[in-house]
Length: 591
Image 1 (spheres, helix red, strand yellow):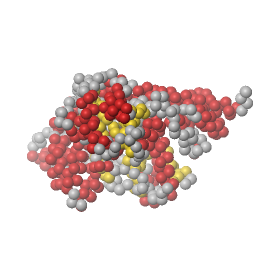
Image 2: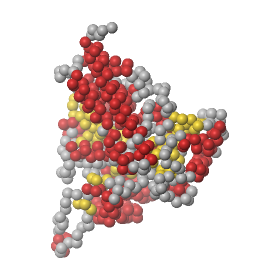
Image 3: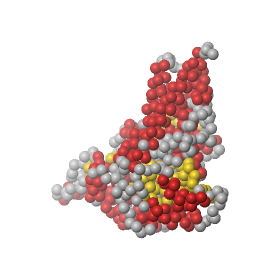
Image 4: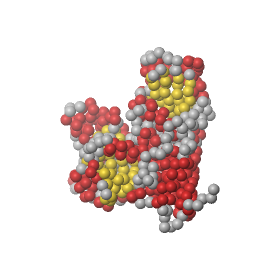
């Protein structure tokens, strides 16, 4: 039957352009993720880092291509509202048998929101709520495989499990490693329950690749109980594979998926099936964070904002200025009942800051592209985020209007913030130290100061110099881990010039308030760190016990030299004592 309604032809074409753009995006995304297996087998660690960085740009590139296509095919005056509304309905029809419908809906939103004004950002035009269910979407092959110890025996099931990943590299000694698995898991799993008729191992089909490791993610199902596990697979210096550890505590597995680490590469035909499986292992982990850690950051943002508005609908507290020392670059606020902070770049920076808005944005983007080694908080970046003005405290409204007026728009009952970063809330390290000091907890002060120095040390080895190392720029995350979250002064280690302060030419120069030596833009003098970091005796004592070398230029220059030689150290997302080579006294070989 011929099409008589001119709107119908346009709507169908818009829907087709959108789905073609998304399908191309996900095909390239999946090809990049699938090739992680080859990079792992080839020990191409630099290629691993490059692929993670490059993959981040895929989404925005495909969105721009779709927008350009629409502009070429439709009048400059724009597309009528009725056409957009009908295009959305046709688009839903294209998703009924789709393998990634939730990602395709987000792609539609991204294109539409860059074409239209934000007053159209409601459910008539975009997918404010999902329109297509992701339940029971079948993947080929299935998203996870099952192995039955009752038939094969546990050892036979594990041999079969690892064989099915079809790595081209041989295992150094798989029988030894399976023995380690049994010894590590014995008390936590095998002693706690008798085998039931449904005893099985469920393992996600694709390994999870990150840095130098491949992770096998799965769970033991026995009766009504489930025991999640994550097994790390590494390479020896000779290129043979070995199992490094098994993680069995849900909170340790959740730490593997922490936003303070680099994103995984995973080959997923049906990503929602992977997220559903992971949620069953880590029920407290938000789906938004799981999508983000799988490299699907835009979907993570979509899920986050849905979670936020669901929370606002079921809560009554107000957004308030975040506690702690006010920053010179960022204006920070939070909702006490919601575990995140919201950061807006100030219109005017503090007098000592020499960066501009573009530089700050570039450095926050850089953090997404590097290995965060568990020490830098990832951020969600939003444009034109609308928050209900009634939920903002009067103090916060006044502070926003004072500090960031250029970033604000009034829209009915909403306050729109044009550019916004959101990250997990942590207790600022300076407030934590004050609290522990008042409580007389010198043991926790000692522990967190060691963590602080470890964070600086590990960032340096990963080629990141934090710049502003004040305590207030670090936070204490769950389980006492110290994480850096202020990025406006970060630099590549290799761009810095670490120097010793030269001796004064005469006594008068030493007594003067001005330096007697020239200081370049990238010059850094580590011996000065003690002046502004170690002002209290308890902190100084702990810092000098663990990290005195951070005050010596030699550590920094030696670290720079290692980076320039192309050395890449291992950063394990689990304690050294959990490694089989440590736990069973074999001695750990560097990969």
